[in-house]
Image (cartoon, rainbow, N blue to C red):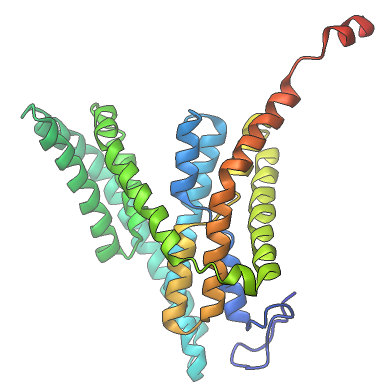
Length: 313
């Protein structure tokens, strides 16, 4: 439970972890952002990217990415409250400007990019060089992600996602996806290695119950919210379980926001370590949750035994 009060007050804190209001809000937000890498990997392994659960998961991830952008924009302004210069109008103005910039980026990419980029891929493919084609697609995706970040203030992940939407309109999109699969897997490995390097195993001994509480919030909170959303959307049970288990984790955006908050002085070292521990444990347990979800779905959908059918007849 968090006691809300004046943001400039030093006595406002969380009853459980001793966090002030701003840090508690950042902490809660970091525990609610699922990892795109983990979820997409799970959907592809099970052949579900085009399923209702996969499409719903993608929408969920896009909304999270957009929300993370606004949180990153708001954090420097909120950090000014420490010096007593917090301005709510400046925060709203910054969010409005960011909304306009992201809208302009989306319009440019979906209107102009859809006409230019497919022709660009065809032009490269005429060289009949697999290496040149892969390099061109990779350079194009990185260029859009970099431009989205530098010009429009979006995250690299959001810029790369929009680049993927535009590339999907091209006739050679399937070939591009096949060529970039090894590179995507290599980046996924680097992500998990970096997560492991951020983890401090000592916290499992010194703050065992706190880490378990954080892990429980991630698994139950995120998984339960995803299951409820899928229920409202009337998604089949098997897909609901897959979606809930896949979203019961946190990842890269949690590290981004918590690390940015740490640099601004909004998040303490202890909170950052707890977020890292919760993320790593949730990612490690995610395959177990996915297997359990598949077993439950098969059990619920299994036909009744022959004896039961005869008795009911």
